[in-house]
Image 1 (tube, helix red, strand yellow):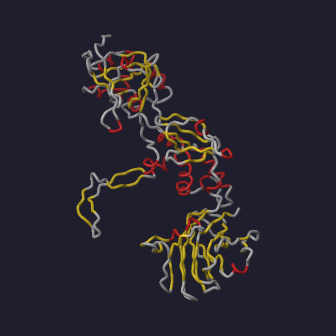
Image 2: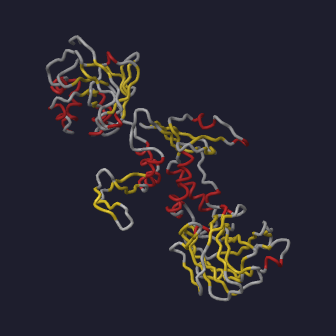
Image 3: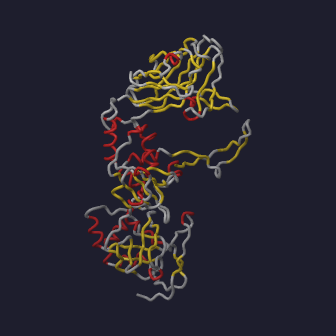
Amino acid sequence: MKRFLGAFLLITFAWLTGCHDPWEDIVTEVEKIDQNLWDVIKSDTELATFVDYMEANQLDTLFEGNTPYTVFALSNEALENYSLVAEVDTSLLKYHIYEFLIQSSNTQGTRKIRTLNRKIAVFNKSSGIYFDGHPLVYESPLYRNGKYFIMDEVAEPKPNLYDYFAKNNLVLKEYIDSQDSLALDLERSVPIGFDADGNTIYDTVSLVYNRFFTDYFEFREEFRNKRATVVFPLAEDYENALTIMAQNMNSVYVDHTDIPKVWQEETLIPYLVDKGIFENLMEPGDFFKHPEKNGIYKVKNILGDSVEISYSPVDKFTCSNGYAYNYANFEIPDSLYNTANRFEAETLLEESGFDKYNWKEEVNVVSDIALAPYREFIGSASNDSILRVLFPPAYDGTYSVEFDSQNLFPRKYLMVIRTHMDYGGIYDIYVNDELIRTFDYRDFSLYPFGLPSVNGEDYYILEGRFNRFDMYVDNITTFGKAKIRFDYKEPGQTSSNGLVVDYIDFVPVN
């Protein structure tokens, strides 16, 4: 082996800019052997199998130019053993090629390198020289377009977090993919004029961005200094928990295949994501460093929010850009599906000006006269506001409001309406076009100790000037939005007639 007369200057550059590799070596003064690197590798009988695979995958053409490469060549023994259990493909071979030079004499400790298949590998020099923990048994001199090492073990590229969950729980991968959105690419779009309101009109060029990656972490990318920890149940545990949920609901559901995908994407997966993605690498003990009252642990997630840890992370898997954990015993919290589901009435309104409101487009209102809805801010109300529509004195005309609820599971509910005792009348209340109850606001005054529930057990106690009444609803037979309608029948004996709704609770009846 010829002796090197110089050394390589190791520089680090932010490769995230896409300009240079973070570990690109620049040759200063070094003696090269004037031979093509691939010709030397081909002449080494110990690498004959590696040469055959490289040529079969047309990777030998890399060495036709002057681009310098460091090749972690696999011995015949390494490839023969590996081919018995797995396929030697292009991606695996590219993982053993680095598009810059590594000179071990100028290296100490651990360096991360981005290989030809865009994966991060680890080069280490301590008591020996290692590639991803596998010993390098030979280091060549520098040839005209690179150098090579020989290793007797195959280094398998680690999956990134995206690849890991694509294999182990496709539901998370599909959820991430569903977060793709289009945005205006201002740099490539050309302004061509203005509209009537003075807004710029563009000859638009769109770009696709993923809201999940923007908010949380780029699962598909591998970085030198940026990693995440993800706790998410594996597919079998996830499906088993959905089956238990289905059987706990006293509904038409039987197993995990019955739980609607839209509910999982709107409710369950966002809940798990918020409680299960953290910045940097977290060991199991890191989840329980800060005990709170009643044994509840809180940890900051990747968004900086404090989340309660009510699970034990197990089965740690090291990915190329972080750790992935499973749950020790995954259960879907009862609070996500088996407690009151609240609909805030003021969400039916949209602001049309200062302190002015209109019904949203999807709300259907039928009235003999024009009556403006209003969102009134009251500290004692749920969400600090109520929906209010006031009628003229002794109004006996038509007034009907129809709207859709949030998504509901098919089951029996106790529908509880919180309203104001001073505004009312007599109303027919429909759910999915079926009359559920006729309610006279005068009933509040007939029960000074509390309005009785239809369940025959509970009473709704006066809360300031607010109170509640309820009714059973058992005609929701499919997952989706229920159609609710309030029909005003005639004036009541309240001080003012009108419609006031704070919220509507759908309480599952088990």
